[in-house]
Length: 223
Image (cartoon, rainbow, N blue to C red; front, side, top):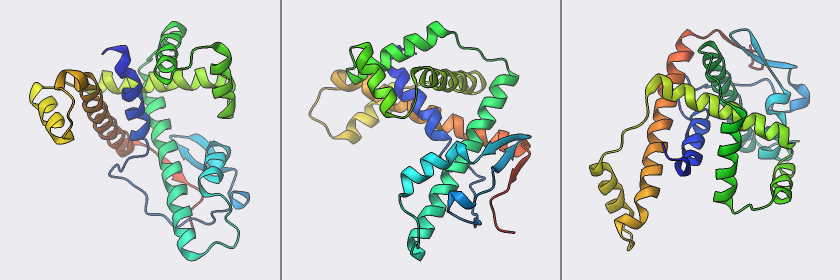
């Protein structure tokens, strides 16, 4: 796979963690106030998911939640469900990748980050640091996160294979876009989008398989 398509492909694996796998949770939670959450929200094959894993994202997505109206409470519960489900799926993929001893070198991480920076038009080390720090991470934390994304990405590809894109699929996507651009001008973009979609579907299928064998306990639900 060409490096210029890797950004979208990686995103597909990440999005698969939030997608609607067969086991999607229909849960009623004890509270949508993180201060009332237990320290451990869930375990995945014995590995703990503590509330710090999702608390910051939950607050960022929901904003103020005191005296929430009923409809706002539903939204907050949905956000909590999605974040917790995503974290569970991520842990499952990571655990399975570790069992298969999937490894990524620091050089591969550097190559991917360089490509992503080029795509975003970030040209200097200072600008790179500013963007990362604005997201609340250090450079070391960001690079570690990219490495874990790549490990999960490689695991999904090892298990499900690289996507095959046919000329018919390219032409169908092109016609559906109803664009005035020539096919050759948008071919690479179309291929990247089709690959990302197929990788997301493969990741979701793999997550379903892992879920079927997993030991998952949720500690934030109502009895």
